[in-house]
Length: 173
Image (cartoon, rainbow, N blue to C red; front, side, top):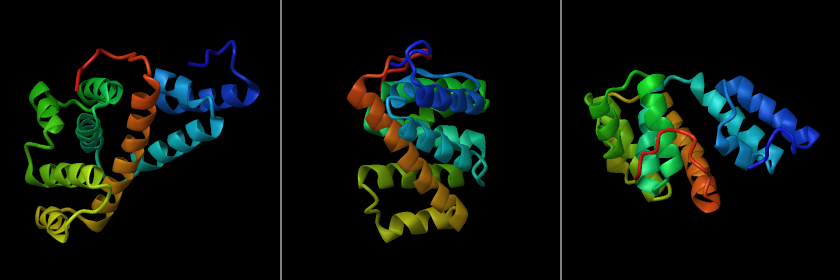
């Protein structure tokens, strides 16, 4: 991890962007900032998706589903914490998200689609997309689900490959 004291000018700029965006500098950012371009790209996509049609609770559930699917303890820990503290999800809702389940059919269908897209590397069946649409998902929601799969896959790969130290209450996949 890059500390503030050892950051180059470009790294310090990228870390400031992460802090401004997230309110703090998580360890994930300190690992990603070895490449300021990577950190800026991650922050940019995360910020853009935060302004989309999916509510925060759904975004956190998506992150939990993907983290569980990919065995990423860092992201599972972070999004379980953020899902509870930031999105107001209950312990039951957080546990359900790990299984791509939700208390409403539309959210559940989005989680199932996200897990399928992640595990099948995008090669989902037409029936899986039709099931999400039948549950009421819009085209914008479907597109954003895929954006969240990509965003979370990126962070899962970084954390799993580089062993990012977890700076949230630990939740094991």
